[in-house]
Length: 471
Image 1: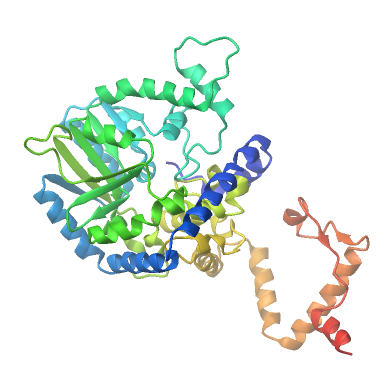
Image 2: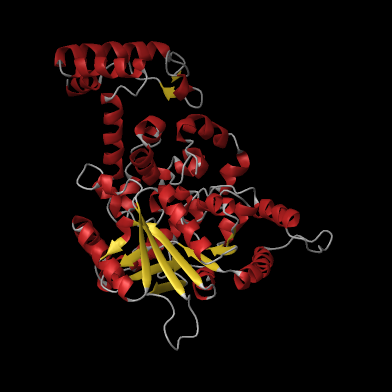
């Protein structure tokens, strides 16, 4: 997926002006936010379970090499071929080679964000392999000119029923009843009927991997539609692709984290489908692949180990941070310009593709702290965003006038008398600028005042007002 994060400011402005999108994004608060709150409230000892899950994920990362090597040993012992990829491009080439080795021309694929990093569909298409996305949301985006997902859990949350209906009418060769407006169950069935023949004809199934279990060599998959089962049980070849940070030492670790993932993502106690896949089909087994591969992708992940951003590797891709983020709720996922949107994307994208290409993302946050509050892994996202801002400043990546303003503020802040005098002057100037009671314009602050104004201050500092009150 091509990086477009350097255009965040312009893309966000377009989304803010899109009335239809603004209405569609309300689903985040009416569905996911409310559902998560209910699910967390109903789970006794939620905080204790979260603390334990954080401890287990951190312990796994502390010995990541050990658990990955154990996973490879156990998976290989059970017949799985484990492949390592340093870059997303290398991972895509592994999958292409697997397809060529088994003479694959048709593949079905369940939802996977790592494959978006790899631009996997494009690589397979170039090799002559027809890939069908089978997650309903991803399928809708695929038939809409391969549009990228806007959310890691609900990829098509930015579209409404009417948009999808017109897309189905354009794409599916079906007789329509004039004037009939199909409801969501009818549209879901229509997609299912189209996809069923693709499943049966598939020669290779491609999935992600929510977690890896070192002690058993297993891949854990969490879905709500059941398409993952048809991607892994029907084709002769199954390829699971995931990041190296997803490994957990034991099944007990997996059980602990799974008590949090569905609750944080969609507000469910448990997802509709949970699969633990361990090796290809064995003797006497009636379903499953003849060949199973696991491709482990680094893609910059190990570069975070031992550094300021290591905690980001605990992320379990639940999407809670973006569901609750006031910025994401207004601009949607496509504004962020790469695979991962929202607060987690504003940290991951600069870490994976470089600060130079993502100048706006660390600033695409109010730092209200809600993302950290709802994160099941207690990732301090606001602190990590501040660290990225500091790095930008230190490396001279911010505009000169912004750096000059911060230096002047820092100079004054270290000199209390100068700071008090400057604050007193600013309070009086701002009162003069808002003679009507509201400040509607200020020099060099058009980005703020284009869409909002401020109440005029009293013309005195807090200390002056407090002193008057005391007298």
